[in-house]
Length: 425
Ligand code: GAL
Image 1 (spheres, protein in one colour):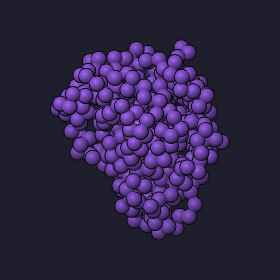
Image 2 (image 1 turned 120 degrees about the vertical axis):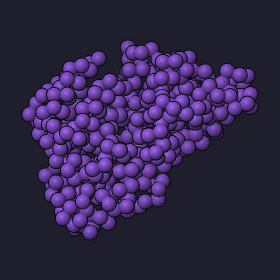
Image 3 (image 1 turned 135 degrees about the vertical axis):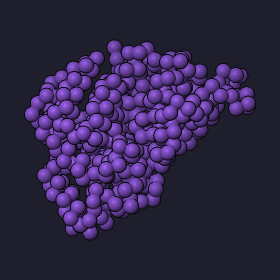
Image 4 (image 1 turned 180 degrees about the horizontal axis):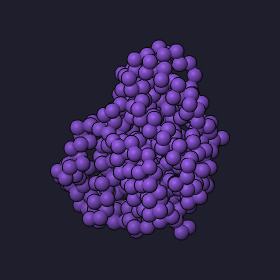
């Protein structure tokens, strides 16, 4: 997967991705976009492997039943969190060559597309399909700009989950999840003393942003963390400095080759018992299941309390989509109770609809459904619920630099500057 990822970010890779995604291609059966039946619905995601692909497959099976007059075309571009897909998508949107639908995140990331005039208002469909009351109000608000609703959410994921290899923990005599950062540092020291040189598996850019945010939640608390994104908390504050120092210390327990790793490469370290822990979103539950790895446990990141760091994959109808009617059928399916179930049982996320039945889901999601109901919601910048793509990019490069130079003051300065440039825009 890593090789594929690198190839995709080159210019040649971009062209290849466009071909792989079926963009503009006619396979000669007369049913391609724009010719005759216009049956094809190109669905653009980054769900290309493992549990992510399994989730997509579940949804596609439901689409085949509900929308048999249309044909699903897989436009997936591999790379965790859309690290490659987003570049491909941006270039297609710029060239007015959108896929029929694409995956976006509820919140500030979606607002980027709305402000750029790239996606259609779906308010009429919400009424027609009874979606306005099917989703929680807070979630619908994050899909709404100027009173219009622009997207249909497929799920709610949780970002701040600490995954663990049970055998590695047991061998080190660790029997309960750490409840605070100091406790976590003690566990990491114990693991090191037992010969696990890099007990915390970590990947590149966006995965480092996730780890840093989890530390910020622990050191600032949920309310002040929320304030970082709405201008109420100062990025220059002493508590942010403390968090950067804690994060710097955590990096010393991680694998040195982290900057070349996607999340699945870091996950492999955990599966192989070379690492004990990995902070990752709950797509990891689905992926470990898809890989038939059973020796894992999960807990909220130490010190995060009941904070539920949420993000929601949601699908849109782009302006100038070639098959708008086919896309509406896709959106209707994914917003339906059956579609949400077919997708989420396989994806590790919980349904966005409030009328779902918890017992339909695997054990992890049942626990997550209960936590979501009573937890304190906080957003995620690398997964679009907290910040725009510009802000995410600025934080990402600052953290990339920090991964090699460890300069606390310079990271904080860059975070302050990013907030000044992007907050409220
Ligand atoms: C997130 C996305 C998830 C999952 C993850 C890792 O941005 O919302 O559904 O795919 O990236 O690729």
